[in-house]
Image 1 (spheres, rainbow, N blue to C red):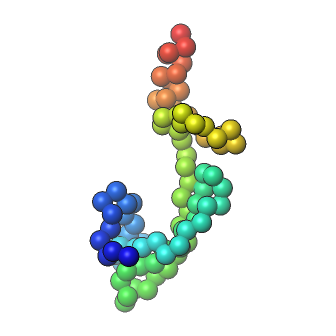
Image 2: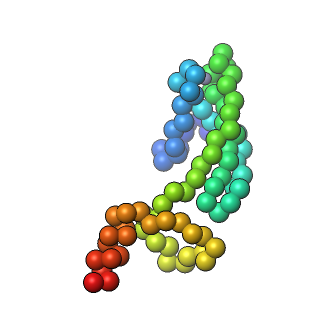
Length: 86
Ligand SMILES: [Zn+2]
């Protein structure tokens, strides 16, 4: 694996020493929630932790929606849809 973070990859910093943290492994718990194991790249620090990544809102609806996914619409999208309906 490359040492350089992908430009669009979320940058995670260690809560203890502020160094970059890397994701070691992740698994999808639900369609909207993933858990990831992260570790600090500062070997002196050595912090490791578990991270939760949750999808919170729909900003733009899917054209191929999964019927099992119930994700609240962002307030801005809700307003937009209400305006289009009127
Ligand atoms: Zn650290």
